[in-house]
Every structure is written in C-alpha cells, then in structure tokens.
Length: 348
Image 1 (cartoon, helix red, strand yellow):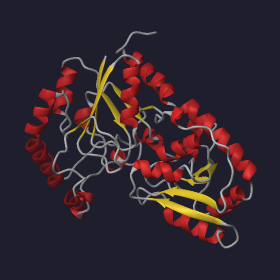
Image 2 (image 1 turned 90 degrees about the horizontal axis):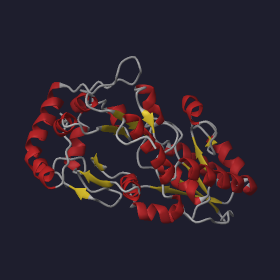
Image 3 (image 1 turned 30 degrees about the vertical axis):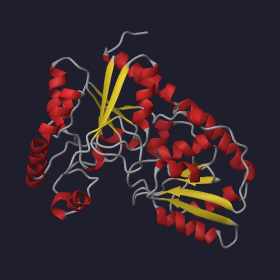
Image 4 (image 1 turned 120 degrees about the horizontal axis):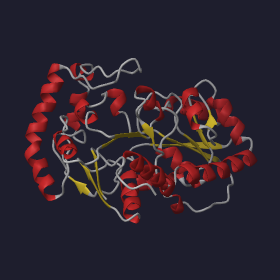
C-alpha cells in the first residue's frame, strides 16, 4: 500500500512516527508539508510555499477583524460545522490557490501530492479509486470548520481531539502516537527545589492560573516553575525530562484535556495535571491524569508536592497507561483496523 500524508505543518512529530510505522509494516509512506515546523520537527517533502502562516504578514492578516469573523464554523452539534467563508475570505483563498497551483502541480508531477481549499487533487484521487482520509488534529475544525470539498470525498474521518467528536460524530478516534521505547525508566525522586513544568504554546492553556498557583505555593514550599514557550522540540524535551510535575491545560479553550506535551510527560515518568471535562472522561475511561481547574489548581498542586510517594505511584501508572494507549505500534494496530473496515486492506 502507498500512503501520502498532506499537512500544512509538522506540528508534534507524529508524521515521522506514522511514516516509520507504515514502513515497518511494509508499506510505502511519504508526508508533505507547506512550511518547515516552527518547532524544528524533520521534513520529508516540504514545499516551503509563500503566503502561508509561517510568514508574519500572513499571521497579521489573519487577525484583521473582517477576516477573523467572516467564517461561521459552528461550535455545536446542531449542524455540521462546514467552513462558510465570507466574500473577501473566499476570494483571497481562491486567488491564493490559483497562484500557488503551478508550484503545487510541479510537486505533484515529482512526488504526487496536493492541498488546496477546493480539494482538487483529493477529488481527482477519489475519482481514481484512491482512499481519502481526513485527519483532524488541532484547531482547524473548531476555528474554521470542515472543508466541504474534502469532506465529500473522504471515506474515513479521524481525529486525536476528543472535543471534535462532539462536533462531528462521524469521526473515529485515534490516539496520538509516541515511540515509548525512546523513554527509559527512571527512579522517581523530587528535585530540591521541586520542579514544576508547564507548556504554553498558545493562549488557551490557562497559563496565568498556573503561574499564580505556583507563586502562592512558593511562599511555603521550595519549588520552581518552568514555562516552556518558543523553543525547539529538542530543547523542550531536555528541560521537561528534568522536571517533577507537568501541568498541561486548565481552561480547555483550545481543545479538551491533554495533547502531545502530556503524552511525552507521562512517558518520561511524571504526574500530569490537567483538566479532563466530563464528556471526555466518559469516553476516555480510566486514566492517570490528576484533575484540576483554575479554581482549585493551587490545592491540587499542593497535594502532590506534599506526597512524593503519591507522585511516584502516579508516574508509574502514567508510564504504563501511555505505553498501552499511545505507543506507536498500538496506534498503528488501530489505524490498520480502520483501514480494514474501509476495505482498503484484507481482513487479517
């Protein structure tokens, strides 16, 4: 089987993991991105297209009020959250697609890839009998909505975001993959002072609540807080691996529960504090996360830093859980089960 992933950016290292797993199973796999990852994840085929959000002027344009509020992607299950651009937004994307298409077409002739807002290559591949997968990861569906042209040809719809299933019940869940073999066992002991770590890629994590809680606790406990921001993935991993407690997100404003930062922290063997909303908890089942919200994060963190033994138990539980749910081979098994259901590979 030949598999092609098309993604604007290599965000969390998953494209390389999926590629390695497909190849391990004897399939061919390539992935294409539009620009190089700001976190310096490796490229396979990188088009380095102009007029993309890695350019400062494009990011500024996206924040212009008329463009920000011209789309009306729905945030409820009352109707399918299709992308409905305003007139100016639609014209701008149509112009960009046509302007970039010659460059993309040359890449197709060389490598076989595509991505435009009108889904022209994906529609052509569907006409040729190729299986099309829409994999929603990140905030695209929340902030933009579903691209109707791609949705019409997709035979399988996947997500690693629990809240998106509430927006589109056709989505099938797939855990974020991680090569857990890269994370050796460690003896869990508190550093002195205790090191708390928090990743703040975006403004939706509730960082001010984390900072305020640690400042209050530092008045009576020896501890430090490291906020990870604007670093390469390699730098983040080095710093995070030397911490004792990881705090993910408290507000769930940009997605529910946890992401790759938490998965890595669990694999490193440390307790993870985050906010798992009730609808997600019902789907997730048993998990090792320590529940917290803005109003009680101070008490939650204090209960942890006052019990090294409890933290050690949580660390061991988290490592076992992440190996079971998120290891790339387990995720690969689930992905290929979806392929079998779609009829793309024989039933084993």
